[in-house]
Image: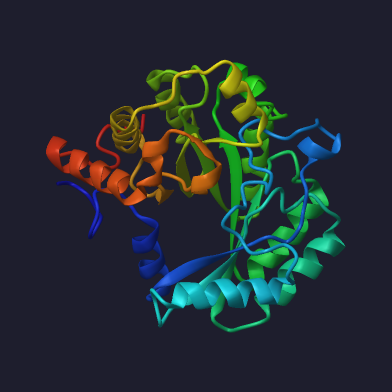
Length: 311
């Protein structure tokens, strides 16, 4: 196996953190009670059709609690698994740069200064919420700590983007990545496999385009159809095909083969709250999915970057 990896056939987030920080690191997901321009009317209403009522922050802290309380609550739960670790504060729910710089400072910096064991900040946002003054502030924050910007792209295909009400085009995403990289800020991109009516080739094309950009990480998600979302309501009225576990595993393996080995794989599937999930129900068995991906990589004797062509 011609790879640079230790324990997996891809560059896992766990390996990256251990290599960079020489210790176990886990992310503490927080809800800072931001909203989204795709909900307030600035860009649209209703948000992305797949997005849960909590702004994809279903496993983040309780927004009724202050951020320090959220951090301590989740940290204690994580410490049951890892007693000796460092933390990255993950501002997960909604769009975490959709606010004035003053508000961003008031939310990001107290949590960063709370403990020496908080060694970084990860901020989930949209590429259309990266105005110049925001990026300048993020550049200053990047000089103080280990900063990661997570951008939800989901797909490069404009017809799908319109169908899911994403609210921006691919060019906006490319420009957002460029702005961040000009300030040397690490960029992690979220993509979703299984979006309505996309083929496997569509999903592979998303990865083929992404790896042309200067990005440092990718999060691969499976589409979860969730109750109390527009997509969920549409699906119940007019179902569209959902990926099978076998289709998903095969697609992820082929995507990994395309991704160069320096790009960190932050995630290979997602999570959903069981009571809210319409489908696919097999997605609830997360470890079975991850083990199936590992098994398929081994069976094919393949690995991340095997089909990557620098030219």
